[in-house]
Length: 184
Ligand SMILES: C[S@@+](CC[C@H](N)C(=O)[O-])C[C@H]1O[C@@H](n2cnc3c(N)ncnc32)[C@H](O)[C@@H]1O
Image (cartoon, rainbow, N blue to C red; front, side, top):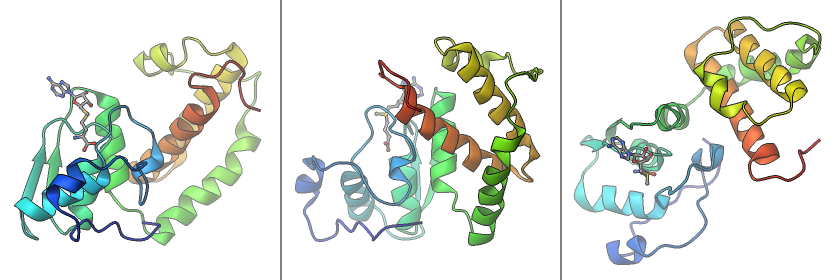
């Protein structure tokens, strides 16, 4: 995982609970899930109330902050959530990829633009998956996104596929969410 370690062990639990600094580090900003915990607070709670090797349960896992910090602190972690987006994000953020995995996903990304074709029909993707996210997109953009998602299945494993989907999600959030004008 990139970036330097966030260690909260030098600050009190109360100071950590009051932490207002922007969420950053590791995979925390893969997607800006609403109402994320502060990683400083999550790490402090983990360090104050558990020891390495303990198991942590976050039944409302949200953007997965606690899962990531638990793993970094050497704890086992289980999470659940009513939102399938939260579960997807938490898995993606907390399961690390090797350099070899990143190369597989990176070279797949290089190949995707050549596969996108606005005139090609996409089959079997008009599912619940796109009913919500695609509803307000212009058709061309929606179609390209659908083709992109369809081609994710070319990747060899779930962990590669999750990684690729999370990049599309992050890119979509940057380009589309709350925008009056769509980014190029
Ligand atoms: C503030 S987020 C949790 C943040 C998270 N603990 C972290 O480490 O970043 C709250 C989450 O609770 C989930 N939630 C709310 N009610 C729920 C319920 N009845 N069952 C399961 N999850 C629920 C929401 O979907 C949301 O993702």
